[in-house]
Length: 100
Image (cartoon, rainbow, N blue to C red; front, side):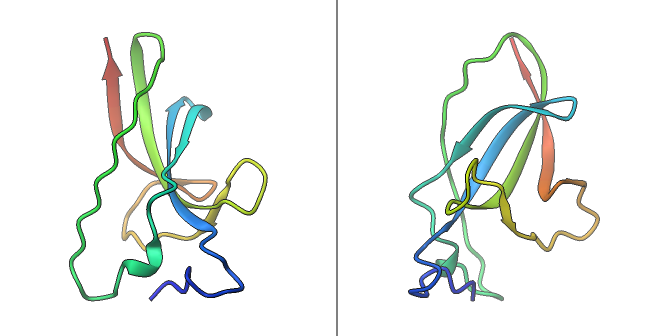
């Protein structure tokens, strides 16, 4: 269990997404509703989040992390355990998106 609900952590960890061009984060979205302490090891969990982006047409990477919202700019706060994942500064590259 991620003890995000521990009084000392005060629910500071949230899922965050970033739209990236090259290595530059152009847009960041922190899902304030999510709570990683609800995710239990060994139990399947479905997580759905929706957000809108306004970026010029082009190709972008979608990155995800568990952000520390107690710090300025919400940087990655917990390392994700993804075997073979492509990480950059704590962000996991989950795929590419083309905006038309």
